[in-house]
Length: 143
Image 1 (cartoon, one colour):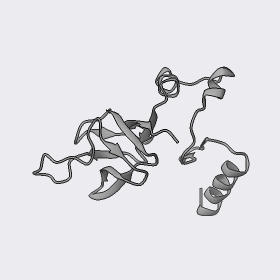
Image 2 (image 1 turned 90 degrees about the horizontal axis):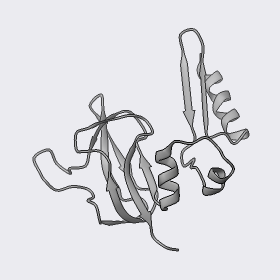
Image 3 (image 1 turned 60 degrees about the vertical axis):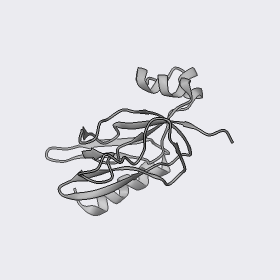
């Protein structure tokens, strides 16, 4: 599959307003997800199939910040330090760094896309994470 074909798939994802597009052929697997795609309480009432964890998060009002790639998640600011980016109970703003993911010696910042209070950190410093895996849960601040 070449770059032009992948661009067409991304365009299709956006035009059809799909949350996820996954296509495989003999030797290639393409999985594309729209950033910020979320399950709403309305879709749960309509009976859409979602995991119990997603149902819990939506019904409890928490927002999940997920891994944008596979790698190793780090919440500590420095290797030899106990200082963390965030802890349970911390108030964070949209754009605040909550940690970083290391993959192949490249370090990618993980930033919050919501302002609120950290309710749960689901992975420990140095844990392996999968794309889309929940890193932290945040109770959004009231508007």
